Image (cartoon, rainbow, N blue to C red):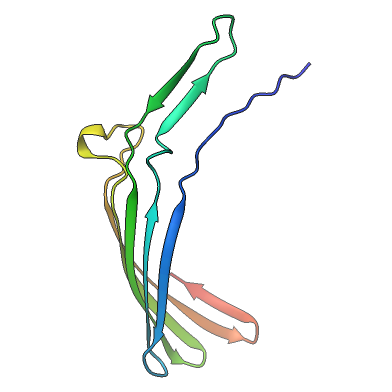
Length: 127
């Protein structure tokens, strides 16, 4: 007979505010800010079905994070669209609590991409 096993995981909640402003016909700008609730995600409850009924809680010492991002799309021609942006993410773990299981620190991201409309309803995208 198969026994069912369950793992409960708290998924971080996210709140995001995004803005889009059309500047003139080919240019616009985008901005976003978000907050993620990693604090509760770092507390992991482990329960093992044994005669002793062992259970424990692992605390990864996560903290809530935020992200700020700015970008710009540019409609160069009716068939060519270009976009670029930069984002900053704060770290969910302080330096003293960082481990090999979660080695992530604060991050900066830079990205760009182009979209070319080959024919109607068919785009070629490169990023």
